[in-house]
Image (tube, rainbow, N blue to C red; front, side, top):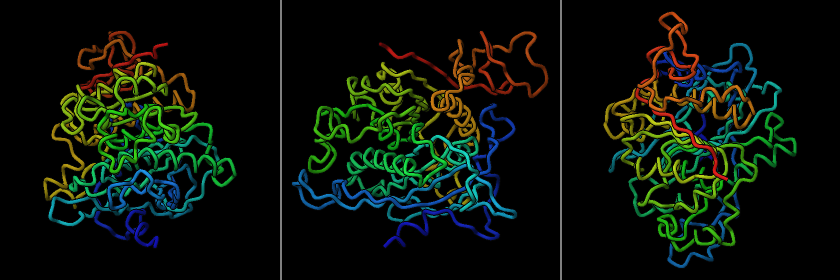
Length: 437
């Protein structure tokens, strides 16, 4: 049975595969300071977890509120600090995404730097749960998962097995499954770590990262409560989401206790159209929050979407990073060669304005600063998240500041943001708001 889940979704070795370029997890020379790879080599394992309690949202029929549970099979890719053996070869990830109808799935490969099955390095590290976008896959987010593992995190990315994004009749399914999947995986891995099964995981330091639909799930498990009048409540078939809505008997099943931080990229769920939580639901979120989005996001919206999450999560210490003129696809790798011949395939990955190596490096920098501060307790990282110049283009290089063409900004009053090379903090916004009492 598991043959269906594992051969494609797991990373594979491909001798002599024609995969061009460096892995996006290794940033370029123009990247801000904290984007750089950390000191650890990276290992990779794939496991399968089965949630035998999740309601069967795909069951046929109308009356589903009393539906029997289904065995929800979830493959998990786990990256971790490792000690690869001599001559170990890095992986090539192989997977597929829905193609433009009526074509079948579009396959692709991505060059990685992780080594499958490498021995863990013996350290104990925070756990980061990663949730991809609708119809997505972890193989399209290795720019982040590998990068974080090199910096001393164990990163577990879930294969959610969403319906084809073109099948609108099934669009409500992920609204139930996504938070349930994330909460189940976090609880299971945390319990396994406490029992000694994952000695490299510190179960008391856990954070969640989500992109697009994964952002909806991440915010929900982090404490944002689902509105009884929101789109999610209406869209999930058969009223199966009702027990999990704000005030419902199973609402707490969606939460991860003791979560240290949550970071979301282009999150679905905000604004008046989707309105998954409403102002009351977002105000219930108290977990430190990093929101990242493009102000031309036409998929989930920015003013009435991404920015709404930042503005209404008033009881969380929170940050908003904005790519000016950026769109929705900021959570994906650069488009592989096999996904560049058709516009539909290309648009899974690429932004019309921003180059992917730039969006990846900038996010690696800020997500690292955010997690190091709130999950690892490294107070020095606060300086990378603090500025009195929220619009990056307004900053001025300080007189007497570092010299040289590739000088790095030290930050400070009126200066370019800390850690950015001279002339490379452009087209961005960074906002911060402290938690209200």
